[in-house]
Length: 268
Ligand code: ATP
Ligand code: MG
Image (cartoon, rainbow, N blue to C red; front, side, top):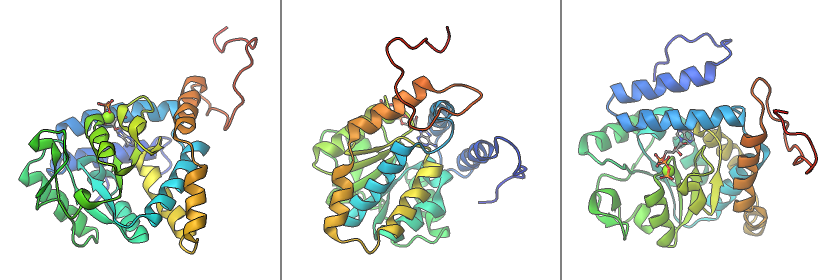
């Protein structure tokens, strides 16, 4: 994707680049207009995080890498926002953990499915799934529940970034081990995930890939230990704490202690 000229020393370079990619995604027929609104919701939470990967998110990203490496049939689900924001990075992750890529849209249209498959292929993807649509997620209506039987339908571990809450729940009910990337720790999708990653997808996907490369020679036992050491509820609570305690104008201190009961409130 050709990125517009945004000076790299602009203080909000990453954010401006992200917005441009989403806009370009809409222009190319990859991203839906709803996707623009979802991006805005995500950005609001990213401000509160200090636009960085907090330690608990990094731990989630490492656990996600281990879980994907342990999987028999991992699938990375790609929607219009994922394709616009991290096309090359999601292809690199699929390679690093030997996963399938499957295009899966909340508002499924053949045109948009095709455009996203083409876009991923232009970034080096092969055998992208999703167009067959011969499988079903039980509990959802047909339009929203359609998947490939030999893709998400047969997966044991699925990565669903920026996923709608209903679909995340239905996938978890199918018994899939679910990894969700979502900046809103209060959204239902990360709350139903085995591994919720509260981070911007722009930072999260490359970091999961880095962890996977780092863990490439680990034994199953070692990978299992990484997964078992991760606590989903703690990670959600930590992200919420950072957002509530952060201060505008200065990043929240990493791993700050919770204030003691008699500490003055920030606005006093
Ligand atoms: P619920 O899951 O409770 O129904 P919702 O309706 O707000 O919540 P969706 O529209 O289903 O959520 O999904 C979009 C989600 O993706 C939002 O929670 C938003 O914060 C998140 N999001 C948007 N852009 C990004 C991004 N770049 N990185 C990570 N998360 C993002
Ligand atoms: Mg959601």
